[in-house]
Length: 86
Image (cartoon, rainbow, N blue to C red; front, side, top):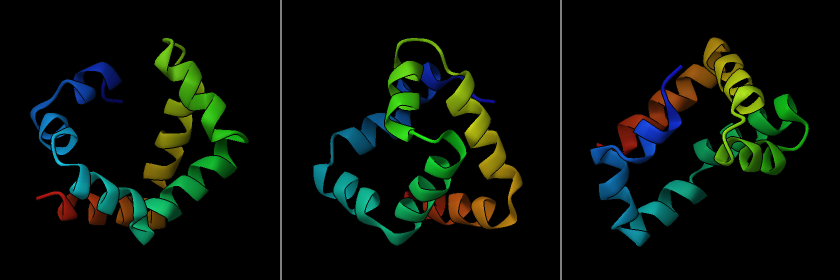
């Protein structure tokens, strides 16, 4: 599982954070909404899991992401989202 701090400090994240329009487009994309829905089902409360992850307790969110990536539909959605960022 990738280190979330490294992802947030990565080149792609920096580019995305400087482009609010692109960030909004990614947030509102149907694929992103489906990913959020799948993660919410896995965590029970995605917002709380994300807050805990931001404070260093990444176990629940990392587990949900791992589960998402093992799901064929989830893996396809993630790949589609990644492709849209290129």
